[in-house]
Image (cartoon, rainbow, N blue to C red; front, top):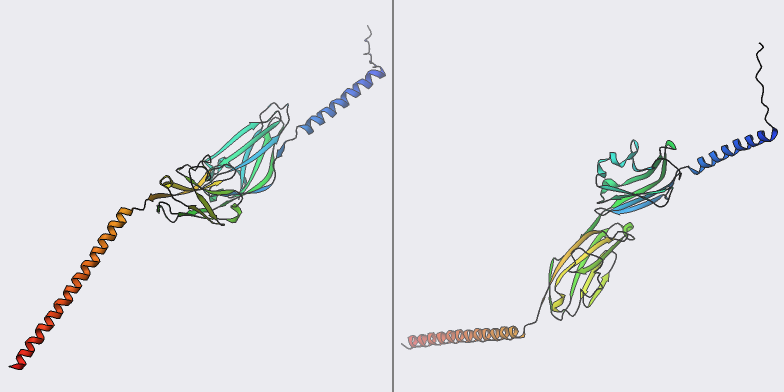
Length: 305
């Protein structure tokens, strides 16, 4: 029995064309999806000034492949002698918090929040992203430089007394780097220990006030003082963005009334004291004169003898 040779199947020319077309479209779609799935970190290179004792935040947004089967990873690192080290491996970042949010498919944002800021937080930071289902490679973002500056507030008097109807000047002196001018605000408030922004200086809690201000001094002038002006006044320093209070100082103000009765009594006592001094002085002088006259008479009698 003869073995039959396998027959070679010849596809029609039209089928061959369709097969080639399908293969080319598959390659194009794959390449398109790969390009579309490239990770991109969206934030700009910048320099941030922070206040010692205050807080600062860094934000990073990652765009990634929408049909990814895994959750993207976003982390912050800081440049050290060994490279960009994850903050979780550095002791000075124990008080950090990181929040993540999604704004639609394929977009994820990480916000790094550090409070309170201190000098060890100075340095260069970077955001790094990774999509494990796409590639084990890590994408690095731009460098952000954080500069931490010192801040000092001086209140020369903790207590002050003012006369009713008179005026008082409350002085508050601040010392800080000029680069902080655009991120700090200094203001006065009354009976508001938390320095909450719901009670600013121009509210009804402070009457007949005016302000003297220069680069480092903020003086609150209270005029036509009344009893309701007594209380605790707070000089507050806060950041513009978060309104976090980084320093505060207080002055306790007391108001006293002018007592006419007490003044009249004091004047009467003073007048009597003056009259008494004059009487005593005159009596002492007369006694001295009498003594001198008596001595003269005695001397005269002795001479006559």
